[in-house]
Length: 417
Image (tube, rainbow, N blue to C red; front, side):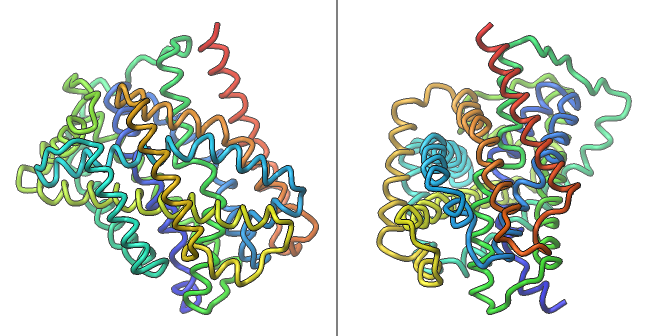
């Protein structure tokens, strides 16, 4: 039990980066627009993408290296491909998360200064937290924040259940309608999160091992991951339920503004729990998105920092891992990532819902390739046999990659036909 306690953490960070825009925005919107009709899509995404994230922690504990070292051993082309795919998504992902967090900040504080100033303040705040506490503070803060929102959402979902009795719970899904297909693809793209997080999982797992001085067993590693993954799935379904009870059954329109949606989200809870809960829900939703912003702001520059080192062709060392998240290049890459996100917000933000969908669709497009790279790394001959996935898990992972490609092809046909 002591070993598991020391291993416990990367799975919560996975939950923190997942229970954000994909849950608060997309899962709620799925329930509000289509009732329970898209629940099978959410479950499908959760099941089919499960192995891809597991491979990150599995590889890290098997080899003592991040997945990026696993990519390097497959050839330099994999590193360049990872860089290209990361550049294609990192700015829109951070921008979308910062946008939703800014909207909730305005709702929580009542200070109407605009989403760009709020986003700048929040990114600065998260950078300060990472500078002061680094990984230990990131680890501790996310555990408290995720628990707070999970409990709040569970209570609200229980109160929502009586609303469903005898009501029409399913909306019409048109698989030939380009807008509906785009939403479904976006929903899958970030359900529970982007596939690039499998690399972050390997980095966080090694950082946790250095923090505690304990190298987890495979059983401890998988237990930590599965708790986090199961939690993200359950919370996603609870958000769908809330969207159905409060918006779909009452035919309420899903707001196309970060600030108005934030107010709508808080009202969603308050209508079920009572107005007394409004301050608590505002705090829970805001801190949850703040934890997502914190993990995203750490994940991209940390991965890029290690990626640039791997491009030199040298094997990953303990010194590389110690410098990750603290060296000057980490802060420079964080500043560049944030600057790119603000440029995206300033020039491409026209519609809240459309922008969030764009970020998620880009993640969907890159997902199959990133998943395949992770699969190749964890099944390579240099990974100890006892840590390699078994035949069933390998087939499961390949099936997930295939179905992601099939959904992508379907989206392309509907979008461009």
